[in-house]
Image 1 (cartoon, helix red, strand yellow):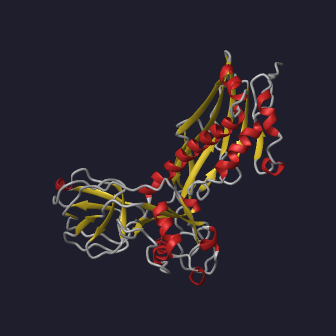
Image 2 (image 1 turned 45 degrees about the vertical axis):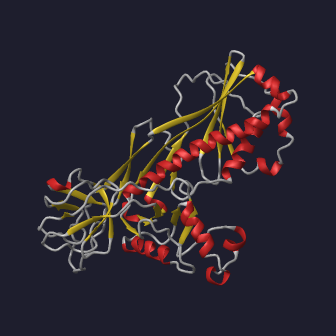
Image 3 (image 1 turned 180 degrees about the horizontal axis):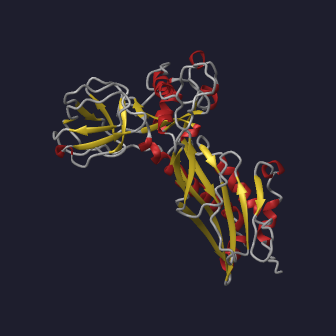
Length: 419
């Protein structure tokens, strides 16, 4: 059996400079190397220091969603299914010799796949290392920043993928172009968004409202009065408080949508009941209604999110609304449809609505040419980054990698706060 050995002398000096408590903040599990195992202990202080920086700059969605960090069996783009129990039906109790012959259900499912396997390389050759270690800032100090940037890059990509799930939301509240929380001591933007989730049957626990930095600035500036907020943590520490049951977070990845161009579109005259999701259009109006658009119907103040749009409303066709569909019936007559203008898509959801599945990128059964690899897990976000080292001709390449996939598994438990 072959055991790989190596030494990174330049990193040893950095080890003493890392406080012991900093090393205790992170979980480390040893990776395996084909033909044997080893550790990259000499490099770990640099990785820990970099992760310590990244973990204090957490994006808002990753720590808020449901995380599945154990999808090891799923290959890239392979479908994984998760069961979904249907709604239950109650019936009257009627005494009889035997119990009723009922209770069968059709169990549904949602699919999820690991769709991305991404890496960030960091490469150094001997002359570069020698030059920086002789009178320069030192390679290790630069490598700390390089590892921080590598992990931040992967973290931001995963965050952006979660933010893109705004198109799966059930309904929306707010006004396009108007930043939420702009009126001092007015918490209506949060309470009305929460109302959508309550009406849809979302659980009362594990609720999150992730807003962009524009809404965050208004919140900090307008809602920081101690007597109104009940605490001085907003004013003194800049911490966004739990509000109306939401854990309020910020994310730079929150999307500002591009709305469809539909104008003067109407429904046909068939009429639609509460709960309907597929709406047939009359041959009227111009432009498009695209997936992710927020639309309203005349006489109904609810703002609905479109799952499937229509590329030309003048030809009729259909649009499909996100579950649970219409909250107010549409009369059996042509009803005007309005496409809400482009707006920031701040996201409110229960933790079980969005899923982030991650794993380290797969290796062939024989292993690859990496001299060693380790998995470093950030306990705050749950993300586990793989750090690998590949020795090359008079140079070395480090690689920070992560594989992941995202999915909205419960549209009813996701709502938008427009801004």
